Image (cartoon, rainbow, N blue to C red; front, side, top):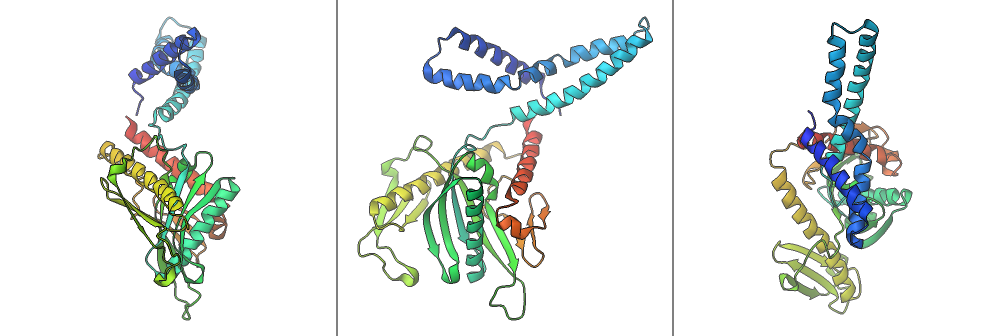
Length: 358
């Protein structure tokens, strides 16, 4: 699967034009920063692009020497050796150019909103949701990310029905985006007297945190209802109407927030979640239009898709999208070998994008 030479020539021309434009120093400040970044990115790949562009010409010249009857044997041997090196370098260049040409996800550099909900399996599912949240907390701590709780709904015995948090740092979304989906746990609950293994699940959603510039929300498109916060068992925990429910009418997305005593703070937090969900909704719509014909095992972000199994009796964690099993479950839950899983998922995603590129 070759990279079209036309695409490579476009890169070389673009690099040359930007170089000329920036050297004249007549670009506006805002545009200068953008164009400098584009030029810098192209600079990393320009040599490979030029070599790739001239490959056919150089190859033909060397083959002429090898096949020419007038040439000395020593010259032919030298040309054969050069051709071998040229082809080897061409393969390396092609790989680098393919990766450079991959469509960039504008959300990769963004912070993320992490949502975890207990699924099927009652109490055991809520305990597993709590385990997953602790794992992401440990990963955040190790990577020096800032994890801030937005809302939390606890169940008995230290479990979690639902938790929403924001995570801030470098390239958060690109690291965590493949965590979205159904995480399944297989283990013997503490209350199980017969030693039987139970299966339960929790759903994880990772959304890019959207800025106000990313999503335009019209006030007229919102319906805001206020009500009294309620605690476990339905008892009222607040005497004022501080809880907020925000409905975005065009998409039907609903967000409820009641963790804060202040209605204003609940609305602020609710809008943060709403913005992220609308942004993701729009991104998914565009992605679906672009990828109708593409086959992808990972990166669909489908929350109903079972992506990973955590098997406690066997001490393993298996990602079903890439058929990777790590027999280090305890270390994985401690955030110790989380990167190994993420690197493998990213590699698979790159392969799939390359297959869809040309």
